[in-house]
Image (cartoon, rainbow, N blue to C red; front, top):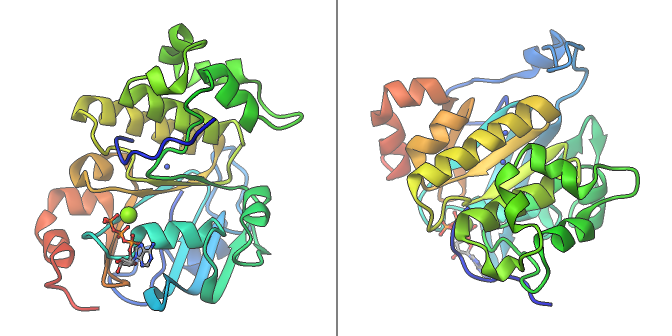
Amino acid sequence: MTDTNDKTNVDTGTNLDTNVGTSVGSDADIETGRPSPEGQPSTAPRLRASGLSGGRGSATAFRDMDLTLHSGSVLTLLGPNGAGKTTTLLTLAGLLPARGGTIHVDGTALRCGRPLTANRAGIVLVPDTRSLFTTLTVDENLRVAATRGGPKPKEMLDVFPALEKRWDVAAAALSGGEQQMLALARALIQQPKVLLVDELSMGLAPLIVSDLFKAIRGIATDHGCAVILVEQHVNLALRAADEAAVLNRGSIVLRGSAAEFTANPERLEQAYFGAVDA
Ligand SMILES: Nc1ncnc2c1ncn2[C@@H]1O[C@H](COP(=O)(O)OP(=O)(O)OP(=O)(O)O)[C@@H](O)[C@H]1O
Ligand SMILES: [Mg+2]
């Protein structure tokens, strides 16, 4: 039983607060009780990271990051290679220790650097490696991730019907798009409150990526989870997201609504290539 380790192909209710850039989401959203998809007033954001810093080895990869994501919204986190996007997701998921700051899920503080604690609190990561069990079938991969009292593997077919005809096929034999569907289904079966998706589109055709992003949008809306979608496929990510943020050299240098950046991509491009200073 091995994990996939190929960086081949293939998660967002968002308000984003950072200490730089254009203000979008804010505490005002919490105080005014922005409605959840179920029509209930939300009392706390799904995810709040305050002053979060993290890194690997001796270097700090990102610093003083403030993120607020509400139920049902999608944030795409963009930025050039080495900007710190993956390190941010790994830190939120507890797989790397935070070097400062706090993380709250639904208003409850997490002890940073504890992957099991983060997972139990509802933070689920779809890593850029996919991390599927390649020798196990689709069904078996889902059974491994299923929780007692939670959704059954077959229920994942409501979101990813294309997996039905591949149900008893080993993950290694799936196409890249099917593997990413399975990776998302395996995250969904864990009933995430916060879904973190790293470079879902890697190696996939744009049409497949577009379908996967629609599925992510549906997961956010229908299941009320907040999604952070790290992407290099900027245009497709903007279509799936409510908001976008650009991380460059460890700081968020620009943020705003995805629709705004789709209409006016110039500022986004400048931030991406480092022409906008934090
Ligand atoms: N295993 C590691 N050990 C030490 N430093 C690392 C490691 N992986 C990444 N880094 C460094 O951490 C910083 C942030 O890297 P990270 O992988 O988070 O960037 P990224 O934005 O996800 O980049 P990419 O778009 O290439 O995936 C970079 O300076 C990188 O060189
Ligand atoms: Mg990365």
